[in-house]
Amino acid sequence: MNEEKNYRAELTACFGDPVDENPTGVIEEAGYSALGLNYRYLTIRVQKDGLAAAVAGARAMGFKGFNLTIPHKVAVIQYLDELTEAAEIIGAVNTVVNQGGRLIGENTDGKGFLTSLLQNDVNPAGKTVTLLGAGGAARAVSVELALAGASHITIINRSKERGMELAEAVKEKTKAASTYIPWIEGVSIPEETDIIVQCTNIGLFPDVNGKPLIDYSSLTPRMVACDVVFNKPDTLFLQEARARGLKTINGLGMLVNQAVLNFKMWTGMEAPADIMTQALMNEFGI
Ligand SMILES: NC(=O)c1ccc[n+]([C@@H]2O[C@H](COP(=O)([O-])OP(=O)(O)OC[C@H]3O[C@@H](n4cnc5c(N)ncnc54)[C@H](OP(=O)(O)O)[C@@H]3O)[C@@H](O)[C@H]2O)c1
Image 1 (tube, protein in one colour):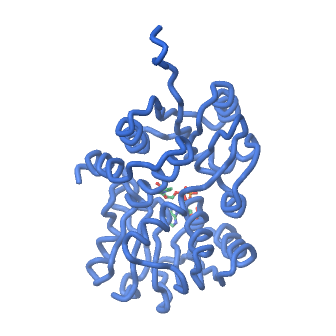
Image 2 (cartoon, rainbow, N blue to C red):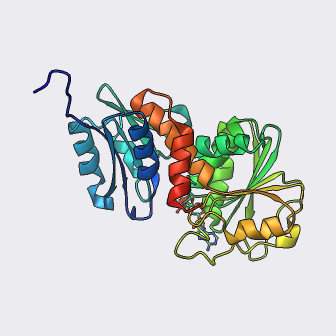
Image 3 (cartoon, helix red, strand yellow):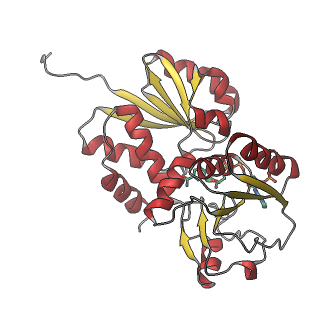
């Protein structure tokens, strides 16, 4: 063998179920290829009862790290060695990094969202934010916006327990104030809202005709409307908001920014963000 050659690949992955529609591998591999790294990103269907074995396998094979998606973001915590502060507060992990054999859990969903906001010249510091939903994405977004200085976070959620629990967590663990509003059909968005974030899976492929049942006349042009759903990116929620004069931000920026953060954690190198963004745009034909 040529002494300069090293055929050993460094492995990264996404474990979830379903994962067929998850495009993160396209973004990460575009970055690896651009920098000439011998890294791979494998998108792997891991069912609920297979998670322990999958994490043990990743550990045994010395994976650089991996992403978790539905239904593993909370369940994975018991198999990890440590959590970052944000992952601890959020209570969910979407990214694991292998640091010398120790598996560290982080959550880059909210950080990816925050970066996307800032890239669109929207700074959440001192702002009043309203979130639709209280699941994993809503937890990550609300905690990161609160840590970035948002002054008030209102949670509108269908199930009362989940909504109240998230509002309580934000109040207890960050400096932001937080309120829960039950999601009854036609619920109004509080008029003091500066930023509204759609954090449910309404509108997600294949149910692209889904639209959150809120009072759209309560949206005013001074608000900014964001959606975390990225497939398809221009959701009906964003279309309704734009029709009422609101600035809108889709979920693609959040997706690509969390992939950029993961890249740096796994390779230790700055990610070629422009190339990774372009790969995602090509994938969505934008
Ligand atoms: N852009 C990105 O990078 C990115 C990253 C992460 C996630 N996401 C997207 O975020 C979305 C949510 O993911 P998740 O992990 O937060 O899911 P999750 O933990 O299952 O939470 C789903 C949330 O949606 C609510 N919901 C679902 N259907 C509803 C309906 N018909 N009416 C009202 N509320 C409804 C649920 O309310 P209940 O509590 O009442 O059930 C819950 O609050 C997904 O579409 C995912 O693709 C995007």
